Image: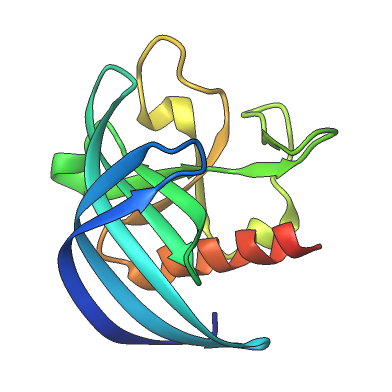
Amino acid sequence: MLSVKIADVGKNYIFKWPGGQKETYHYFVEYTTKAEDGRHVARLGFCERRVYGKDRIRIVIWIDEHPHAEFLGADDFKSSGEVLSEIKIPGQIGERICRYPRESVPERYAMFSLVGLPRRVKYKGVHKAWAVVANIADHRTLIALAGLKRLERRK
């Protein structure tokens, strides 16, 4: 996404996932964006969900009503404000995680700060994946990752 302009903010955005599950995002921020392929609407929804042993901040980014990126709070979120999104790459069937530390991260992720998810989330069963790390207030980075994932899925 090349340019981003705030369009709306609100509370209690409800999204119905394909399986029928509804999830309420206590706050949302909506942006109008302009990219090489035209104008789009990006919405960031914020809630909490229990994952990896504790309630963590969760952010979902939709572009044109389709979810394209998800972030969760790092273990030290309360002091760092940092959220993480697993890097997923095309696999034989759908997407799979980019394995930390064994695999190289695809070059298209070079613009992001990266970390091994197990270095920032300590819990039995945490995925051994590379992750994008961003501050919760850095909406441009959150939207940029969603935009990248949107383009990957269109190929």
